[in-house]
Structures are given as structure tokens and as C-alpha cells.
Length: 306
Image (cartoon, rainbow, N blue to C red):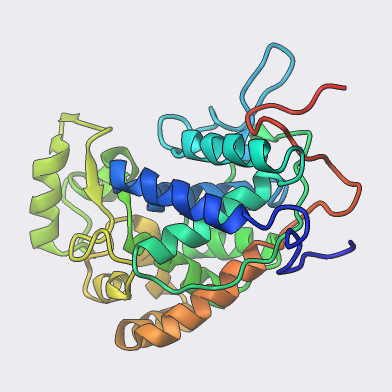
């Protein structure tokens, strides 16, 4: 097999879709944050060395993974869900399904379980045998300018349309105060909040995050305070009305092409859903390992040892 395909496991592991969905349903029942966490985990995987499951690898004495890089440490979640899916699939189809494919399917089901669009996932990725702590530390950041964000996307073969569509993942999930607190109190050393952030939202977030001299960095706020567990287009309405919590959310308005799409998505959910699916499929192809490349890990948190 020289490329990804929709029917990759039809003969070797036809139960894969039922297993992933069953475990995702169970995980979501126990933790409403899991869909957003797994969607983000897939993004962090694909943007570092490609969609090869590198983000899932633990540190060892001889191996440095990505879990303790700044964007992931005490932030990336959902590893246990992937491990559980892998455990079930190893019992049903030993050494057959890659961790990278499990993560791609879990991300799709995360969106579907949040009442977002459904799409067929291209499969056949192999797992990598390395990770990159340095690349993980250079993931697109909530503090990046739109120029930096689009540059980092271009390096992965993604364009401004993909930036606009994939940013819509912020329609679900929670964010720690440490990622936006600079907007609440002393923005750019002015001694005042960011003027591009809605004043009412500023007060709401200040209650969550604490006082200027002592913020509770790990406290959480929904990224979309209107419909926080629904995958819808409300995120774009927020961005358009100064209620995008992260600096990178508001930064979308600083690019004419992206700003136009933000406005269109805020008015047309179907358009957002269609474009999001296209961009997810593009992202899911970044740097994939195929054929005899890489391996099929038997445990997602460590490479195989022969």
C-alpha cells in the first residue's frame, strides 16, 4: 500500500470503527473535555514530524518525547483514552492498527460526538520511532502573530484557508489562564486589559484567573463561553465580536483572507463544517509514514524493541 485509503482495515481489522467509537463514548461520558483534548492531541501530533503518533511517546532514560514540551506539559490530555483503544484493538487485531490512525479516528469521533460534521478518515499511517522535543516547542502558539501562525502552517503544506478552518476547533474545549492572562491586566505594558477584548468578557475572565499580582495559571475557561461543548460556528461569532479569548483568536482578523472567512463562517455553519473537514483531511496527511516505514507500535507510549 503506497497511500492512505478509507478501506485500509476492512480485511485486517474491520472492528476498528466500532471499538474507537465505543471507547470514545465511554470517555466522553466520564469527561466532557475529552473530545477537545483528543482533537488538540491530533493537531499536536501532525504538526511535529507528521501524523506518526510521536506525541504519544513517553520519555525514557534514553529517549526524549514531546509530552514535556511547553505546549504539552500539564496541558495535553487524552493519552489514557488512546491507550485504552489500543489495548482493545491489540486483543482483537494484534500488531495491526497504528497509534497514529487511532488518534486520527479519535479526533474525528471527538468532533462527531460534539455534534459537529462526520467524515471518512483516510487510514494506513504507520507509527514513527522518534519524537522531537524541539519541534514540539515550536508549535503554533496562542501568543503568535498571524504572520507566525500562517508561516508555521505553510511549512506543513497548509494555507490561510486551513488556518481559518482549523482555528474553529476552538469552538470546544477549555483553556488555562496562563495562555491568555496577559490580555487581562497589563497588555503590552499599558497597565490595562487588551482593548481588542470585550470588556464584559475581561471581567468574567478576571474572576476566573485572579488578581493581577497573583493569577491562577491553571484555572480553566471555555474557549467558547457561549456553546462550550457544541462543535458549531459560534467561535467565529465570538472572534467577530471581540470575544475570542486567545490572542491568536483575535489575530485571525489581522489577515484579510482569514478575516473574510471568519465572517463567512460566523454566518454559515455548513460552510465552516465543509471547510473544516477538507482541512482536517489535509492535516491528516502531513508527513505520514506508509508501507514498510516506521512500525505498528504494540504500546502507543513506547516504540517497539526487537
